Length: 380
Ligand SMILES: Cc1ncc(COP(=O)(O)O)c(C=O)c1O
Image (tube, rainbow, N blue to C red; front, side, top):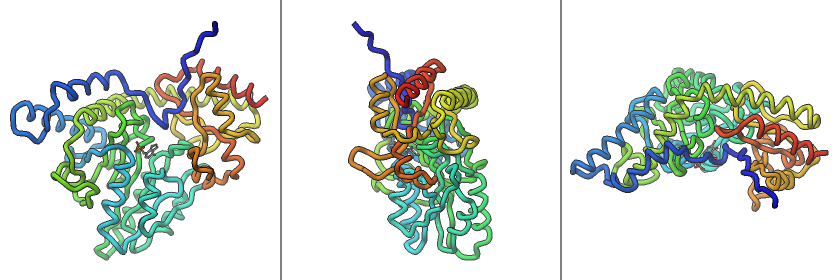
């Protein structure tokens, strides 16, 4: 009889398991404390208090006011609210985004007059191109904090400075805001909004060992948004609907854990990342690492195995007990190779030979040793 090994999960950029401590914190709010926080009786007031505490806890990590934390149902909604929420107020305005944004930024942005900033071969945005793309009608700039495919960390502070200078030099009444999608960054990077220089910031519960369909859009105090969902006026009127209390408890608890541990966990993963890239280079010398080596999420491993078919390699890895993802964001129904890999200059062929492996809390050195062995076997 063959023993079935526990799969090695290397797709944390797609989803993270719910932290058991988070699940425990959420549980009472499904059952005993089910009350609508807007109700008047004492039990509901306690739920309202819990909601306020969670907002305050999240605000702490953002260096923000609790009223600047807007709860959403996930990262896509946070990004959509930021973009539509601003752009619908300025019918003649345009939006500037990077060419490697997540689809939940690119798709809403492309509904308006949208200009796309090019990236260097390492995936970092071209700041000169950013300056060129912004004109007197630009009302929103959206640059992701870290990329979900190649893990490249963007120069957010520098981009924010450019936007701030343009804002300061404007003599018109046209505002210009800066949004960043931090859905992949929240486990490892600083989220302090004043240090980053952002007006809007998206966070995603499902990427930080929290519950799926939970998210936050940080909205700077003075900024007003057109709501996507109208109704009872919750969330400063930007997002109506009875609050997802258990989800919010989960998101805030999860964010607290990842942000408290972020330096230690980033150091641990960085070591694993360096070791893996070193071992891969020895075992499979033809492998090419994609994205920046220096400005990279510590959990991201992205490389091309020339002349291989990533779908086939993924199947073989799965059979060997390794769960990973293709470098491209293609789905079965989408033949187009990833826009991110194309933007950094990969040929369609190389894009289809690329893998994205994203580590997480459970990832160990021995798992990565096994991965290298398997990659070496599959490419021999
Ligand atoms: C960078 C980035 N932004 C936004 C999202 C959207 O998150 P969700 O699918 O949870 O709405 C994701 C999810 O993959 C992401 O990686």
